[in-house]
Length: 559
Image (cartoon, rainbow, N blue to C red; front, side, top):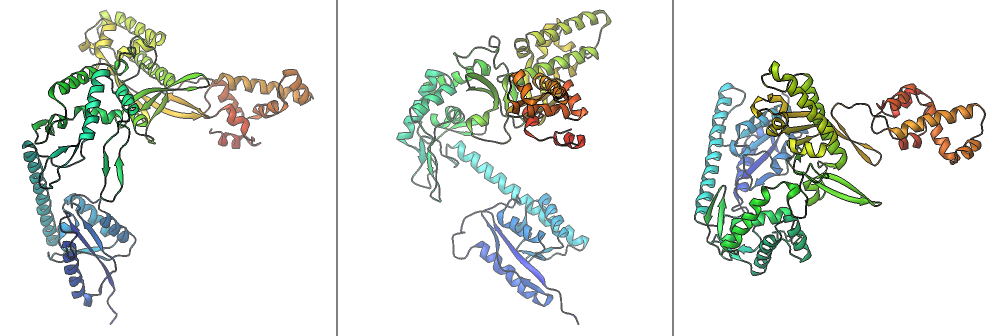
């Protein structure tokens, strides 16, 4: 008789809370011993326990994002485990949907699992039904427990108790761990009062952040359990905004949309708090371009007129910024998190004038297409159709001529995504320009969507928006024409040094550019009509040695 095949077993244990984990023998140890004893009882079936433990302490069963569980599943995927052993099925998961994912993953790796305290056999329909019933009760128990915790937190906050979380600047935990309240940190409280005073004086978060940095005001210094230190940094505008809106400084506790009287002392009195909230309300009613007295309004300032109108795919605002390079002021629109939070590869950094021109072109193209396809009115009328189309044409022309001023009044908001831009127009503004009621506009007229991409041309970032029409690069086109002239001279026997002397150019300059005349006809035609790839720059053309084969040239240069 052939020996039974060896079944490699791994034990998984989990405990939802961290309570008791520091004991010499805790719940995880108890689960492991029970499972190990069960594996030993099945030794006659070929079961053997693998070395190593997979323990998740202080982690909920409502998610699969648990370190030990992920290590276990990696071992299963690698084919090094044949059987997963758990004390109870709810130790593995308390979610039916997560359990379905686990079963599918285990079956794909030809791995089984067993619960040592709940006998079931998943090979039969009754066993699967029993398992699903057990999991349903486990999920129900988890949801009821979560509801109890939420209700307890709500009731405790209603009594004014501090229920944990990140400590606000100006407060420390009470030295008595049983007292769920905050105590004032006198040094930090002075920083809080100074920030409220600065905002009452300046009325602008940006200027408050600058003044706070100049005065050396910093965020809360926090020492973590592992000894590392966090915080103690200059305050960002976002941190200052959150601080000014936090009712904890008024001696209150917020829970969702409700605010209750707290059991801790206030740092700010009612008058200062109300004045700050009034100023912030007034600031929120102004456009971003009008957010401070020394900033001109969107209607009068032709620069940065898209301020406050565009967001990226994460919902982050595109904020205007600028830099000075060789005496030139270069404007950009940047995802706000790049300004306040460092680097982020998903953030946008777009050249300002190019973005503004692209938005105007997209809106103009949309309006003209709507006019051509009679999508201006919801119910077209023969009598007024021509007059409205004429007004519509005037509106599109006005956008082309004085785009920033007119377009700023038409746009409500916009969203940038990779490969797409979506704009919303103001129905009242469009209707006023046409002399009709907003309800008469076609519903599709106010939503604009167009292709959008950002491509690099050397150090230059070029925006590709809408249905791209060929636009020849005048410099590259001119150089191609000159290259043909130099090639004709060389073919006629004129020496390179003579050509250089005649045109007052270095010989190396002519040598590297004359090769443009020998590009494939397809590449040359694209340069002449402007349909070449955006990254095909003169610098790239002269820095590479061109293959003799036209097909290879087209491949190298992106055709």
